[in-house]
Image (cartoon, rainbow, N blue to C red; front, side, top):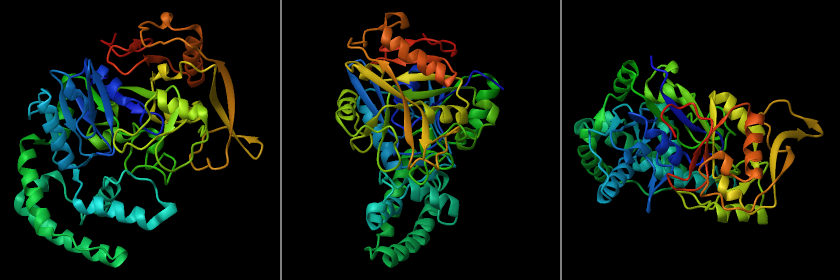
Amino acid sequence: MSSKNVNVVGLQWGDEGKGKVVDAVAGVSRYVARYCGGANAGHTVVVGDEKYALHLIPCGILRNRVINVIGNGVAFCPETALKEIDGLRERGVKVGPENLLISSAAHVVMPWHKLQDQLSEKSLGAQKIGTTARGIGPCYSDKTNRSTAIRVADLVDEETLRQKVKIIGAVKNSVFRALYDAEPMDCAKIADAYAALGRRIAPHVANTGAVLRKACDAGERILFEGGQGCMLDIDHGTFPFVTSSNTSTCGVPGGCGVPPKAVGTVIGLVKAYQTRVGAGPFPTEQDNRIGEYIRQRGHEYGTTTGRPRRCGWLDLFAVRYAADLCGADEVALALLDVLSGLDELKICTGYRIDGEELEDFDPARMERVECLYETLGGWQEDISRCRTFESLPAEARAYVRRVEEYLGRPVGIIGVGPERDMTIVHHSSVEGLG
């Protein structure tokens, strides 16, 4: 089994800038495979003057020779995928069965999943979770329920699809009418629309688990691309304000159909500060001029939803928990340039509850925590033109070193701007980078 593989996983609440790091590592990879989430993810890659916002299609699609895989662990929305494919082709990006494969075992996001998301959130009022309303949670719920699930294999088998839509659609109409007094969906219309979608994606559908296992045996590098962030993991995140899949490295084997030892080197991605979208605990949040400065400098608005992100200081206590859970070998520190212009910076290095300092981070105990901060010097210089660690201001170097020291892991990559070349390869062990 090859150890050349790489997993890029977010160590915060998503939006860490995975698109740029995945794009960089994809340049020295043969496969890029998505293993979790769905169209609720949004990965941005800037190539020259072109900006690409990808939701379902792996970021490796922008690299020649890379075979992109949508794994079985992804909640697959065919409408979104085909819209992305058409948009990429219009911009001259090659997308075909030779470089994009979709798992036949991936579960399909259906219209009733999106409707359920909307109806449920509305009914919960102030207690809502804050989903992206893309139908991801309801799709995973049906996956677990099994009898009400539709997979990609069903989507491309028209007879099976029509039968399942008729039966499942009737169940959903009854439930929605009883719970929300909703108007019934036209199941025949849904069946027609999704049969057409199935015909379009059919050339891309494959047994992707077998493809990836063979690639491992052949020693070809696979880059496993995470969606969202570890702190949104259904099992290990800040429940219930999480997503509905295993977004940590723990999700790679199950979400791609590869053995655990295939994961390889784990790059844990961290913003130089902290953000969160929607509801949920956020101890280092700065709902003040500092938070607004970070939001404007970092353009912190959701790639998928457009919602303004909550912003605050870097929480290394939480990041260390995520890094330990994911087995991060090194860290990629993104968006360091956003902190330029601040006189001083704060890093959270611990929590206290009722005067007692916590030894370990516990995602179930975050509502009443008090943050313990260290203060570091800021810098005024524009660092977007820096291409070596030594060319960074002394204060920026000290910030990076403190992150390394606290996490006990090297910072392998430093992001100093949105474009491909605005990257410093520092202590990375990934062969071929730099």
